[in-house]
Length: 225
Image 1 (cartoon, rainbow, N blue to C red):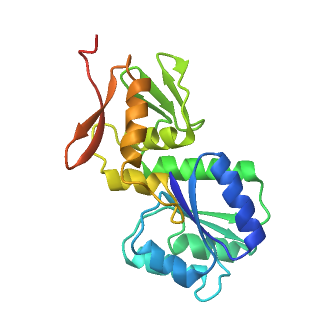
Image 2 (tube, rainbow, N blue to C red):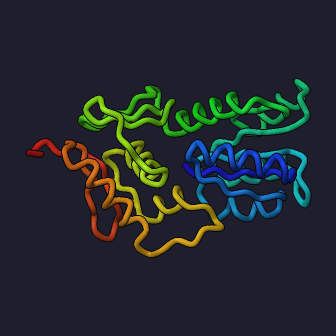
Image 3 (cartoon, rainbow, N blue to C red):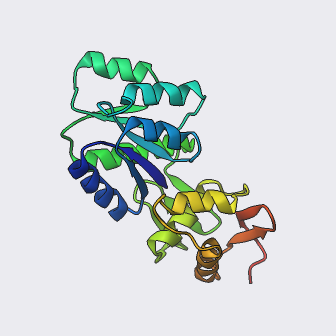
């Protein structure tokens, strides 16, 4: 899951990046509204954490322009302005949620999980593909009721495939979910993680299928020995 953090307070931004990366999210950080608006026109994110008081272009305008492009990416506002008027205004202008600073990290993480689940249209937090189960609340995978040991990158790939099970996911979409803007990505990075996942799913009826030229597909295959 890839998150864009738009926050001009460098200390707060650094803390949030560390915290969210520990939870195995991929996080890009931008410290001003103009650059955020530019990036949001070309990059795809699962969620945006948006401060309102930003240099160059304020958060309200970033949100306004995002929604004017019919971009429904979930936006969680982070601001020191905790008035009822401000909350109502930002929610009316397209924000999906609103948190006042300072906040508890546990509540932020819970709200992020809710927004991600809602944007994926997941009414049930438990996803199932054959004998592979994924709890979107705990972000835990289980295979035949046994916890599946995954690296953060393996988990990120499998999360995307699981939330879109039965549909084709392009290599580019997987890369965008896995890597932040400041990371260099090797040409075969996705293939390596898919190969590792296939080995870990060898005994499962949930299989990652390659559709040449299109991407990957997670589906249940009944004839596994």
